[in-house]
Length: 297
Image (tube, rainbow, N blue to C red; front, side, top):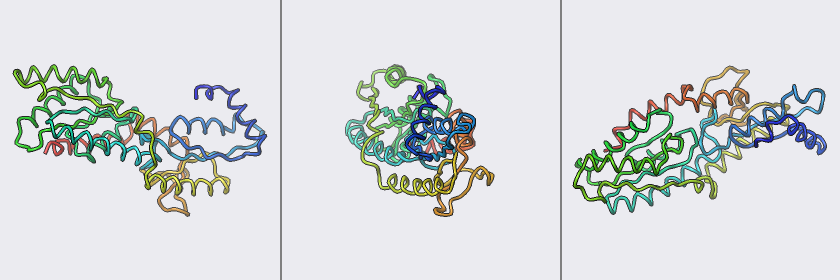
């Protein structure tokens, strides 16, 4: 909410909370919601007014929040993507077609990476790789030609593209089709033409998976107990992804898989994840590079 960037809007929100006797908030969301929570409970803005405690719960299908292995919504989104890709794979296999399937994820390629492995895709495109458009097109063309000319019985090609990759999917299709025609002149159009499917916001909806229901319950359990204990400016993290100093990260005594991590540190690490500076984002790219050739088998 852009309005929340304004001090007077935050002051109004705090006044409403104080009037209703609310002195603790659990904020469920991504980096925007958690940034808002941090500013809302800023002691420099509150001054001598009623203190406000906040605990964040990570909820983002992009899985781009720092220091938590999983956010609420990721598992449900992943299941939706896998189900859709399995259905697309049926028609791709029946007609030996190439499909480019775009999934959500904003600036984070986690959903594209993991769904590519889960559905047995032949290639994954994600922004963390930092490849220019011409390299992306070359990579797709090489993948298609390798499969078409190879001995693999299954001739269909599935390519998962993260929405954060800096080339619109329709433009990508045109560029790839042109290069395929150059590389394979005289081929039947159906054998080289790519098809595009954008899954879009359907990935954000639906009934939550059992994993997400349990994850939300366990994170909330720790968050409520933390608020009752006077803890503030923390986020509940599932299986913290880094060894952090004790003052920055405390493992919950109520759930060994949940930790309370300094909210400001979470937001800083989130920026590092999205910019590619985080060790975790670099590991993801390196790990995927190592298995890239195996996807073609």
